[in-house]
Structure formats: structure tokens, C-alpha cells
Length: 309
Image (cartoon, rainbow, N blue to C red; front, side, top):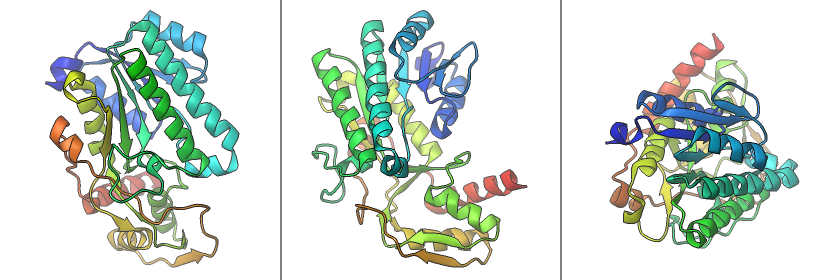
């Protein structure tokens, strides 16, 4: 069904050269879609190099390409950058999303998917459900909650086919953000350096990239009239794990011996545990995570072995 629906569709991916964007692009091309992109660093005949908030350029690009579906992945994706540069985190995430939504409204796209995060739920009862009111605190999470509200406003006010996936931490081959837990840990192990962790008690859920891409494709092909009035969907793996246990697991799977070094400073306003219920995605999209944490980590470690060699 996905191949039939997406074949020859003109699909725009903002942040196409990023970790998730590059995986999504490859999958869409394999399904016969005509893929276009927006990037801050790459330019080609199908990729517009610009700031995602440059409305005149983005709107013209979307119009001339006659885009059918847009995956909006571009934005600040690191919690730490929200701590060090809150102004630009808010500016980039909110203005970029507004630009995409307004261009999509003008050009009458048939589906707009705005990437979000489970972090927007903040200090809420676990597991997080889609109907919860977001309670973020730090700039990154708050900026994403703002973009969610903007997207919902466009969806309701202008009757636009907007969907908002809220993902737990996504991991997999090709992620070169080495301040994230899994890439950072594997890098330390493969370069024979101590693994540094803050505290180690925080509990999180981690979704393998292949399962995340399947979630995006399910959203792109679902009949939006059948998903109800709330267009938000949670996606998780259902394998909650403490940071320290995760690090120990990666060390064991890598078959190497390295030191775990605890850093005294705690992350500001870090929430003890975060994970979601994804029953809605199972029921309405027929989506389920397939890759176990152990299998995903083994694949990830092998990819980095090749990368470093």
C-alpha cells in the first residue's frame, strides 16, 4: 500500500541531510517517491540550501516543485543547545515550523508531518498519553511544545492535514551527534576512553531508526479522516532503561572493558523518567516497534566499528 501511495509523490523533507532525514529520504526513494529537501549545508537541483525560516525561498521552492507531502524534521534537536543558546533554539524551531505550515497552507499540501518529541510532556504521570497537556520546562522542550501548538492551530483553523509524531530517543547507524548517550558511549568504548555519565539513574526509552522511519511512512499514508480529531501520535519502543544500565549494556555488547566515570554535575531540570504509551499508534496506524534494544545496539556498534576503521 505504501509503495502504491508514495510512488511518484513529490515529497519534501526539511533537514534532509540529518540523521533521520537521510534515512527517510533513502526509504522514500526506494518506494518510488520523488524526494526534495531543505538543508543548511547542501545544495542540489532537488535540495534548497537555506535557513528553514526563509519564507519567500521556501514557499517558492514548494510551489515550483509542486510538493504533495512534507516531513518537517529541521530544527534544533539537541537539549544541550537549548541550555547554551535558548534564543536561537526558540527562534529556529518556532519560526521554521511556522514557515513550513504557512507554505503548506498556501500550496495546499495533502499531508504535513511535523516532527516532535516526547520531551514536551515534561513532568507528567507515566506513561505519557497523547491527550496530556504538555508541561515542559527547559528551552528545547518548550520550543517543541510551542511548535506543536502552532501546528495544531493551523490544523484546526485551516482544516489542514497536519500530523504530529512525538518520538522517544531515536538511535541507529549514521547518528554523528556524539553528545547523545548512545553515540557518545560507543565512541568512548571504541577509542578506549572512559565513558562519562551524569548520575545514571534517569530512565528513558530508545527507538531504533528503522522503526521510526516506518512510523513516518504510516503517518504519510494513513487516511487522516480516520485518525480522529487529535492528530498527535506517540512512538516508543517499550523498553525503558536507566542510563547507567544502558551504558553497561553497550559495554557488554561491544565485548570490551572500559571505565565508567561519573560526573558530579547534574543536568539542569532533568526529569527522572520519561516514556510514552503508543497504544494509539498500534490501534489506528497498525504500527509496532520491531527491533529490540539488544539487536539495535549490536547493529549500531558494528556500524561505528566500520566508521572508525
